Length: 167
Length: 157
View 1: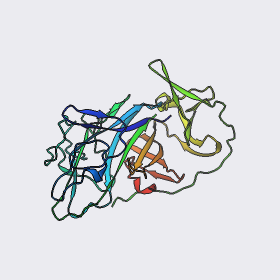
View 2: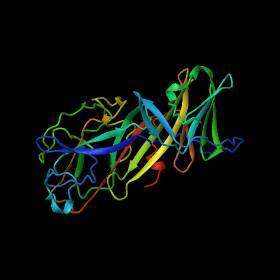
View 3: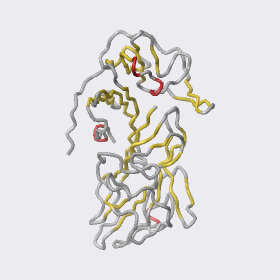
View 4: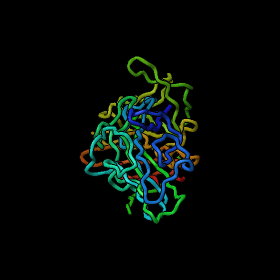
């Protein structure tokens, strides 16, 4: 098989890690795989941060996994913004886990790209040129939606990601 | 907007008829065999002395690109295992280092519309010059001197 990859998410003060999450919905709760309708974000408030990792669970003959890129598509409602720690320059290294917050994130401070970045924007072992040579995970991808009081309810956006697999 | 220097080609069809003899392949990592699934496009390298190494060989062994003896490579071939006549040949310049990897693009991740695409990338680097080929999911071929092409717009949601 090819390398096997899943997305994991950490929640709570104890960094409870859920493997192979089934959705990445933001909401007004620090909850994994949440139903958006159960945790609506009041316009003007933030979502809770998402702390997620790209996790390689099997190499499938590959030597190396690297060049991680994440971005999103489709417009957010009103003037809402989607912020992240992912970036192609001045990368801040691997963020140390902190309990997800609905206050303005201190880690997710740059706008999530809305098209494929020109180069890696999520690191491995703290570096954008890092790689996995066995099973393991990327740095945390931290991201948050910050809304404005005039924003429209019901907006959605979807995430894309990419990685290279050397075999 | 990125300008992609590209040449769109279709793989040429020339004589290469031998089908793979194995049906399962494995790679031994740290003494433990890993099953490796056959790919849509696989490589073979022909050396200057006429010998060859095939990624998925006829004994069921999976070979990594790191096993290739670059200094004696003459021809690098990507072909479709179910129809080896469909192939793309790359004449390897003397002194070149071969490159081969998969670029995996996951669109609409974690939604009911999630779609995974695998792009086959191969080429070489020599004397500061690089040449890369990208085989897209629909078998179009893009050629470039950069491996950092933004290809997500070339695949469909």
